[in-house]
Image (cartoon, rainbow, N blue to C red; front, side):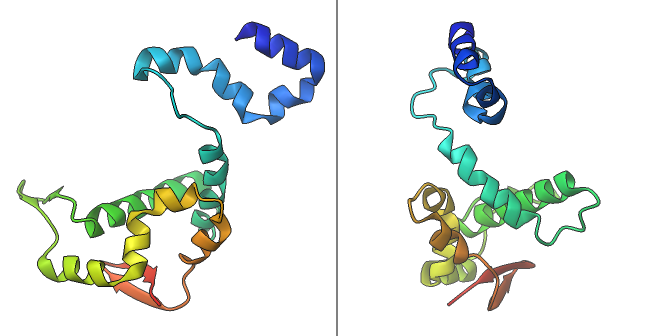
Length: 150
């Protein structure tokens, strides 16, 4: 890894700072030891995720943007888990799953299906069109979360 970084520095030193791939390479050995082989790992997923961060910060008050983005991403993941019939622990310690009415709605609503497979849409070549379908214009509220339905 050090040899690759040295060679990259000889060719164009600014790339080491500007390219995330070089930074990830530094952590590759530690990640392999911790998580196993990194087969199929690509930085394009991280690069496209920047667009998602940008959309999460649109409604932020920008006083604490990192916190606001983290909260928004957590709400999105919780929403995705809920509409995909995920189980969750209630305050009394019992495990519950969304009711049949929500599952029936999700099965019929294409916008909910898109939310469930959102990770696959982000990796598609038609990224902007995929992201546009989540921008709020006509809203439907489920458990306080706004989603766009057509």
